[in-house]
Image 1 (cartoon, rainbow, N blue to C red):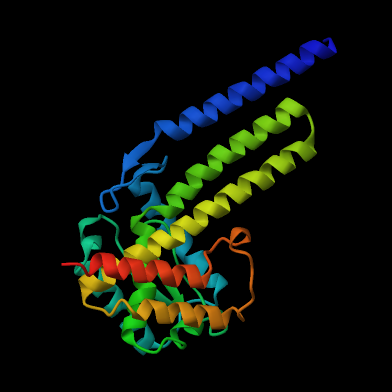
Image 2 (image 1 turned 135 degrees about the horizontal axis):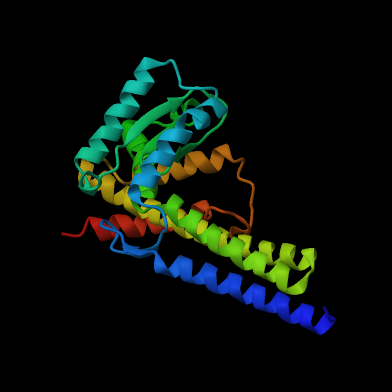
Length: 259
């Protein structure tokens, strides 16, 4: 085949990949029942729940397994269930489960798709009261309800398709790598947006469940101290800066406490 024909074929294949990826992404839209947002998600809620159930044991293993401290486990389950039963979270079909991980060094909490929520002993032991625990778990419930994991999976499928198209069109691996770098930066932005939305929902759920939402600001102090207060430009981080999060949390408190 002549060189010109080869280039044309590459471009046609790349265009086909782009068109397929974009159509697949935008064809799967849904309106979130709690946030009211239009989202582009290819996974069903049943798929999310299955993913969470399947990956929960593996994630627990990476943090030393579940904590054997029954008092911690009971309190986390008690606070988590209170947040679910007394808030808009009760309107969803997600089977929430709350666990304490044995890792006493890592300061972290996270949610898997569909409902499993974890907090490490390292973070639990730094919390000063039940309200702060409510803030941590409320934030993670927010991630589940806003379907952030499912959104990220769909976005990654789209960006991977576009990156693949760039590599095919140019025939240059380096070009594809640069395109992947740009795609990752876009997804970092979405990650920060997700964190702020989870903070907003966390405040909403805390107020609905009778917890003091100001406690979530104290959680930001704890997380900042645990990170060593290393100043990283916000655009390079998957999380918004603690100072920005504090501002947004205060705005959310004012919004949800209005009569």
